[in-house]
Image 1 (cartoon, one colour):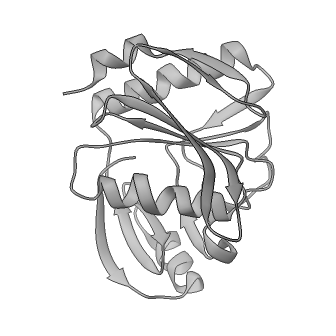
Image 2 (tube, rainbow, N blue to C red):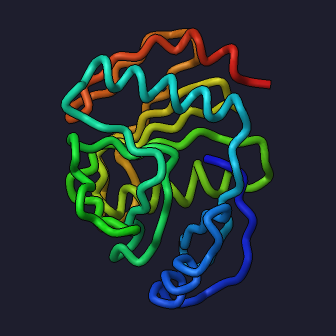
Length: 194
C-alpha cells in the first residue's frame, strides 16, 4: 500500500464517488470505514515489487491479469471503495466495468506496505477486513516493515476477517494456495526494504 492521508470522516459512499470522480488524475482516493483517504504515490521499491509480482503472475498464470489501478467495492456490505496495489482476476475480467467494480471474480488483492504511520491501520487491519468482507479468496500483503509476505485465506465474510494467515520471511519460497496457485521465490524482496 502507498502512503495514505485521512481527509474527512463519515460520509456516504455516493458522496465519496462524486468527490472521487471530480478529483484530478494525480490524486487517488479510497473510502474505508466511512472515511475518505488520499492514496499518495508509491516509492520506487514499492513499484518494483508490484512489477516483480506482475511478472511472476503472468509467467505462472497467463490466464490471469494483475490489475494495478482498478477500484473495488469492498468492505461491509461493499460500502467501501479501495484501490489495491494489485487485483488478480481472469484475463479481461474488468472489461466494461466502471471505475469501481464488484469483487466477484477477484481471486486475490495485493498490498505492499509503505513506510508511514498509517500502514498498520490500513494494510494490516482495514484492508484485510474489507477484502474478507467482500469475499476475496486471498489477500497478499508484502510487508516491508517485517520483511515477510503474509497470505490471508478463507474469508469469513460475515465477520470481516480471514480465518487462515500464513507468514513467510523474505528469502523463502511461498506457495499461494488455490484459487491462485502460484509459487514465489521471495529472495529478491530483500533488495527492496530500508
